[in-house]
Image (cartoon, rainbow, N blue to C red):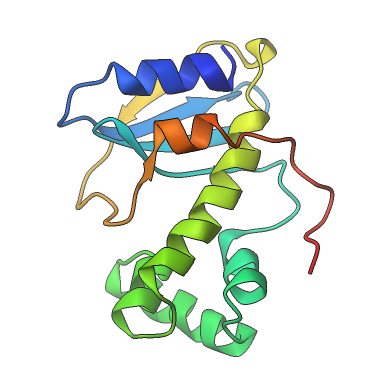
Length: 150
């Protein structure tokens, strides 16, 4: 499977699908994709040289100290850090989607047939509020850079 075939699979999922597609679980998790209906909630990889919080600080201009507090508060509340930042007025929804999109497009580009088929794991709790369309991701998948460019 590659990124294009993954997005085709997501497009074919039921509207009420909510869970994770996990790739490359043999040695360590390589890519995780959160699926919400026919959309992507987020995607990440252990092979990316940054985290979503790094993107939020760099791309959206949120001070790292605020991101750090948000991360801690979100963990205590059982919330997602990006959504916590939106609810508390630290970042606009469009800025969060921009950061989620950048992270997801790079993570999806890392999916390769060598990882084998993904494992579907149903998710519990509330799905992410801010999701990404497969069409927009399909148009922007690009290899992950070695570091974030400021």
